[in-house]
Image (cartoon, rainbow, N blue to C red):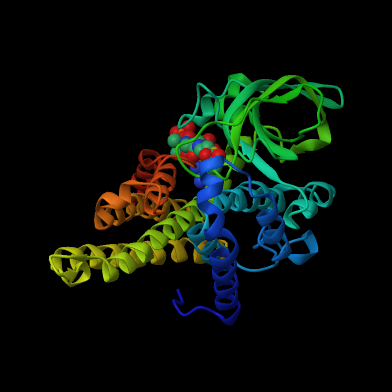
Length: 380
Ligand code: CAA
């Protein structure tokens, strides 16, 4: 793996950093407080090619690699983690499986406008009674002639309130368990589709999530992605990529908190000296910086493997596990360095801490990542 960035990757980093610092960071506190979806920022991300970073230009994307995508996720999330997840769901959980499993006709209709950022996609796997045990889903899709009819519900669907199309996983043959799951593209204007009100979340409040409902929701059979029964593998392989995006997001949140804690430590005085002169603070900053760099290397390794077309389930799980737990530790230390000021909304570190928490939960909890990693290490 090359840890020297290419010219293109450096350009993406600089472009995203400038955009995040100019357009996202100054607004992030307000979007968080008011639970505002940053529509204009998402439009600007689309203009920069960031809604389909690793999708080839012929399918509407920017045609960059997954390392560039991970770098973009870090930078955008350092500015606003809610905006980061809007971008990651569209890139990793919607466009990527369309590119991999879609027919040309599906790509034309369901990938191009989404990779261009003209429309927004989402991924509907989780249900009220099935999360980590994704194969236990109850949503069904019954074939009726040239249609599938979906019945059931999904919840915690990131981008759900705004999505134009949902990639939905449903049982087409319950008896076959996970081999009876299939994937479908459901336009949000399909009859029988409704959404609940947006969830009131602890963090990443610029992004919306909600429950979605399918009641006799009929879609053309040509909207099935992949073959009948391929759905579970599509979901799992998609999450291998998605976890790189979440790890990049966790990294960006941690870095923002670190930068703020370092700046504060260099200004704030206690006992007649700046607090950065105390070893207690220096050691915290040293640990934070080391953990951030370690996480970045794991993220870039997983992204490099994805670019090489190599199975990267364990490496993505390691990147997400380490980066998300690191992010929670680093943001918590950033609060500690700020003392009482870290616990009030005048400073951003409390938001970073709240934002970091979800990265240990969505796209597979830390416990699920440990299952994936331990399965790989015990195989040898
Ligand atoms: N790639 C390809 N195939 C895979 C795979 C992968 N990464 N992982 C598993 N498979 C295949 C297996 O090879 C196996 O195939 P066969 O049946 O042919 O042998 C099949 O899938 C079943 O595998 P397992 O027996 O390992 O499946 P399991 O039921 O034990 O589940 C699990 C494994 C890791 C626990 C899985 O259920 C899992 O990842 N759960 C977490 C789900 C999750 O991450 N949900 C997040 C929701 S999305 C979200 O959060 C989006 C958002 O809003 C931001």
